[in-house]
Length: 75
Image 1 (cartoon, helix red, strand yellow):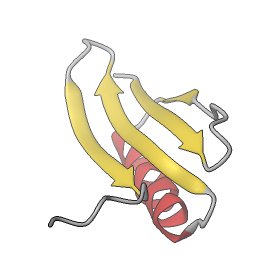
Image 2 (tube, one colour):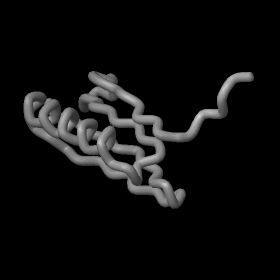
Image 3 (cartoon, rainbow, N blue to C red):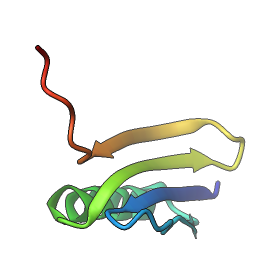
Image 4 (cartoon, rainbow, N blue to C red):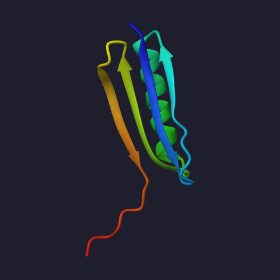
């Protein structure tokens, strides 16, 4: 089965950096998924990102959101 690592990314300049990578083994997709999330969580220029692994049947296997947008403080 094929697995697709989908990265939807907006940087702090509002630029899109979205990509899709194809893996033939789930373990390889999982390693790339976790490495990507670690990089996005630690990057100062990533404003918002959604990272997903989707199998060839279109089912979402894993998904996480990285949100570094400044949230307004509650009054």
